[in-house]
Each structure stands twice: as C-alpha cells, then as structure tokens.
Image 1 (cartoon, rainbow, N blue to C red):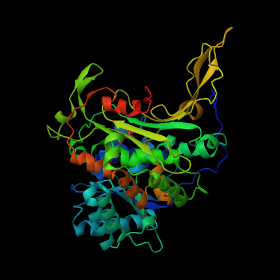
Image 2 (image 1 turned 90 degrees about the horizontal axis):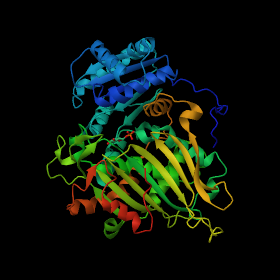
Image 3 (image 1 turned 120 degrees about the vertical axis):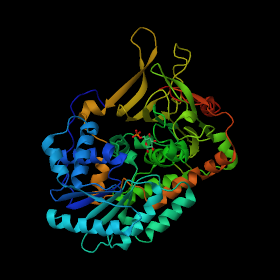
Image 4 (image 1 turned 45 degrees about the horizontal axis):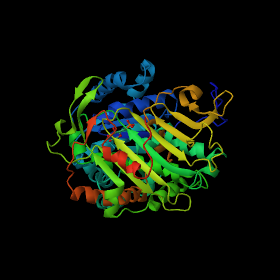
Length: 509
Ligand code: BG6
C-alpha cells in the first residue's frame, strides 16, 4: 500500500468477449432492467465484452412493439448510464433488442418466446445459447422456470441454457428449500445463477485478492491476532417506493442473510486450492456452516433490531418507516439489524463478528473492519502513551473503495509520544474510476459460465439456517420500542450496548 498514483496492472491476457448468445430479460419494463441491467450491458458493450452475435429479448406483460421498448430503454439509458452514453454504442445495443409481450403464467407467451429465439438465432448467429434473466417478483420464479422447461427452452444439447435468479431466494429456510427443490426438478444446479449484486462489487472480489495474493496478511488473519471483526452496511435511504416488498422482508432478510453473509464468508473463508467456481464456493459455504447456531436465548442477547422513526436529513423532515407508502401504521418490521456471531472453527474460535445494517442511518457506507489485538507487551507503559490503541484494517467496500491500515507512530519531538496514523489505498487513485453498476461482472460471468460469484443452493440454505432462530424469536416477540431510532442516527441504543457489554464499541463512521 503506497500513496503512489499510478499502478501497473499485472500482466493478464485481455478478457475475451462473451460467447454468442441471447439474453432474455423477464421483467424488461421493470425497474431493475432500466436502472441496472441495461446500463450494465451498455458498459459491457463499451468494454468490448459482448459478443458481436448478441441478441437481447425483453419479455413483459404489456403489449408493446420492439420499437417502443427500444425508445424506452434508450431514454432510460440517458438517465441511468454513468456519464453520457455514446450514441453509436447505444445504437449497437438497441438494434439487438426485441420484445415479446405476454403473461408469465400463460403457455402462449413461451411459444412466442421460442419463435423469437429461433428468429434471433437465424438473424444474429447466437448459436442457440440463451441466458434467461428473471428480473421478476420471487413468487413467479418457479412458474416461469417450469414454463420454460415445458416449452423445451432449457434443454442444452449442443448449446447452453442458463437462468439467472434475482433475490430474494425464499423468505425462510423452508421456502428456500422448497424453491430449490422445485427448480432443480427441471434445471441442473450448473444452469442456475442465483445472483447477489454485492458479489459484483469490485471491492468484495478484492477481499480474495487482498488476502490470497499477498503473503503478509494471511499469517495474521486468525484468532491469534484478530480481536474482532465489524461489518457495517449503512444506508441513508429509507424504503422509498418498496414498502410493499419490505413489509414482507425487513433488514434481516433483505440484507443480512444474503449480502452481509457473503461479506462474512469472503472475510472468514480458508484459502481455496484453486479459483474454480465450486472450490471457492465450497470454502464460502463452509464459513456459513461454521457459524455457531443461535439458541432462542442467544437471540435475545446477541441480536438487536430497530425501526426508524421520523427525523431530519440535510435539514429536511423525513417520515418514519410506519408513515411510508404501503407500510402498516403499526408495522413491526425491522429496518435495522445488528448481530454478534461466532465462526466455530480453528481459525476463528471465540472471535466475535459483529454485523450491523440499517436504513436511514447518517452515512452510506459499507465496510469490513478487522480489529487486531493490542501489542502483547506494553513497552510504553509509564510514558505519555498510556492507552495504546490496536491496529485496525478497514476494507472499504463503498462508496470510497479502498483499504486503510491504522497504526501508531512516534510524534516528532524529544519525548515518546505516539500518534494514530494510517496508510491508505484508494481504488480511484490507483486504477482510476470505471463506470460500474455492479452487474457487469455478474452478467459477463453468467454469459461465460463462471458461477464463482453466484450463490449455490447449499449456500442459500446455510444462510437461512443461521437466521432461522432470529426470525422465530423476532416473529414471536412483538417489539415494544418501535420506532426505536430517529432517522439519521446510528440505530437503537441497544446496538451500542451489544458491543459495550463486551467492552467494545462500533467504529464511528
Ligand atoms: C438490495 C436491497 O439488495 O440492496 C435494498 O434489497 C438495498 O434494500 C440495496 O438498498 C443496497 O445495495 P447497494 O448496492 O446500494 O449497497
């Protein structure tokens, strides 16, 4: 880590464009398509990572022409692309786009889809390869996949057929198991790409590079040197227009079971023996299996939930959660969750992992803070330096991507005085800023058949198993203190107490 500005990427063969294929987007007129998927495709096109033989087929329930969808997504691209889109490049993408209208539950839709796929295969030379992207409500996943199967659209002879499934994958352990069972009736696990957009974030992938491409960190990455780990995913936004969804979800399901557990898994996993998808996924899932199960009693002591009330953000009044659109006036749904977990294995025994996430917190920040133990011998005892603070390594996931190491240094002068200093590496300084929605890597990987950064069925189920007792207890006990934090504060007081009783505190961010 240096403050130098220029960084030479290590020699690596340039990435090849993905193989010829058709991307079918179910939910083509929805929010995800316009905000993330289409801008991500545009960025991939700009990086020359899409095949010349690409077709994109949007499926939606409205009747509209392909031309109308093109117009719509063209306008959306102007709003949601990073920077002004290049006209020639967006034209390249738009001319590959067509539309099929129809209800998802209606077999006739799939007949039309098959005709469209045959047509684009002949026109564009997509070789029959298709990536189906289900950007639709979760209760439609199973039905859609079975319709695809019934229409013969997921058979793979001489071509590949893959399905990307958005979150949430089930709403508890039983429903996730059931969904896995249903879709595995017709798909092979290798055809399924359960997406978690956190894994598309460069800095999340960098956790592996940082740990396993550098020799100096791994030897101290364990219980001998690490006191505890804090993982924070803080958002300033409220639930916005998603009250409907959020009322059925809450922070634990929305953020912890998926995104935060993946951050935990990357931080705590053992070095894989290769970067083959299943080898890396095996190591990640082992972390989740090793999380010490919480008893119902533990849930009372090791977890905290909260809900935001009204407050001031940048001088403007914002409503409390219960006053948001489509939210019950006495809702017991949590918008904040904090947990203390242990990973019971040789590396991590007795090292607490504290996780917190919430909406309407004062800053948007996602980070993993590794708090090291104090120096073993207080050499500076009796000097001006009474309280040595210990080393801290922070992996900044967003928005200021980078890594910071905090340590002590002697303050210049005749006496022994120590000051806190840090060494920082900022992605933007070292590599420059690249436009990214987080979906580029994931779309490219799904097209090239690399499932490393996707959830496997066992991972999803392991995540649900960890949160199952928390869901049980939270469901059984109605929170009495909701709303328990004002908007733009760091969550309920109980979250601070969770660490205070262990003699620790959350990092001030
Ligand atoms: C989504 C959640 O998965 O992640 C949202 O459903 C949340 O509630 C979002 O706001 C956060 O993503 P990011 O990339 O902005 O941290």
